[in-house]
Image 1 (tube, rainbow, N blue to C red):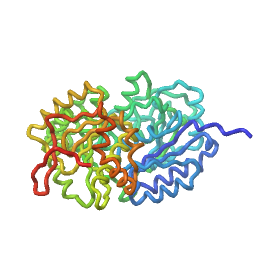
Image 2 (cartoon, rainbow, N blue to C red):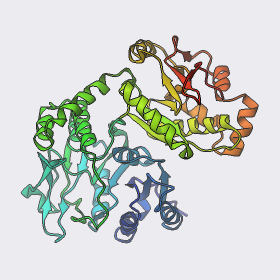
Image 3 (cartoon, rainbow, N blue to C red):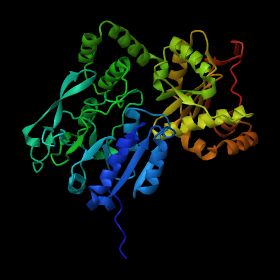
Image 4 (spheres, rainbow, N blue to C red):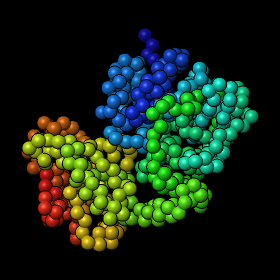
Length: 458
């Protein structure tokens, strides 16, 4: 009996608490494109696996043939979109937003295009259809529209789905495809979603590729969101995201500043100053900064956030809910660090810096950190301790830690008892590449508010 050919294309959807639209999109991919079912894997990246929609997506993954679900912790925005490509197991990947429907035949023709262009490194997109299914928008013109960059335009060459592909400047990223290994990645420092439009196209071109409109790759989505579906946008974060994305793509940032200053006023100067300071901070070297904090200790996160703000990194530090292991804080801390490392590996990061929520920074911490981080750049390190309550892990050690550290509380309690805690394990197994900075930059805060010696116990 002949065996089926392996799948060639992953169609992935990133979702955060949007189960209804995700359900419709995924079912449509199977219902309306049956001719390619044996060549297409379905993927859903769930950014809120424990939220209201998590159970439904788990059930759907158990029911819908060929659907794989990837829980993605508490990620949002561009990080989820980036993970769709990174989690694909096929040569090609097509990212579709949760509320998108593809025209019948579009997947079959995309696969035919991939078969006929095996060395294509381009970013492939298609025309957006209006609710009337006749209005066609082939690209975005590079003009700001509110907090978004790009206004919809139509090239007459895209009106006919049989027309040949043509180059565009940029297009809405609700649908895009590329060779998986041609993906340049999205900056993990982006906080929201949308600032990568335009800058991502520029990065493909900088690598010698093109952004193409494939007129047959037609898609549509609801033009007016349902009541309650709008996600509030932090305009300050969107402004900083645009600055970051444009800088990364080598674009002049003055149009970004002028637009936001025109719409938001002089407060933009503060946002720009904070962005410049953040980008110049020595801890900007790390791809991710997380602070582990138990849900029962929300007040500790508030206090830690104030300290991060004084240090100038509050915008970069993401809260990571810490698991509770009653009577065994060492196991709880080890589980939290394992989660941070697992998420960093999942996102393809080079390193992650993990803070405890009782971290205290030394006097003149920024200048001390500048010297320490500069020294790290010249060393092949795996684990770096900045003192009490702050430790960084490099990608070189991710696999070893995740293989060694058990993922559940009961096993972790046994593991920490056997090894004497995470610190002692790292001391023994990474002695040649483990760095302890001196002088220490961080320490722990006592219950009364004083700092204790910089020791990481367990």
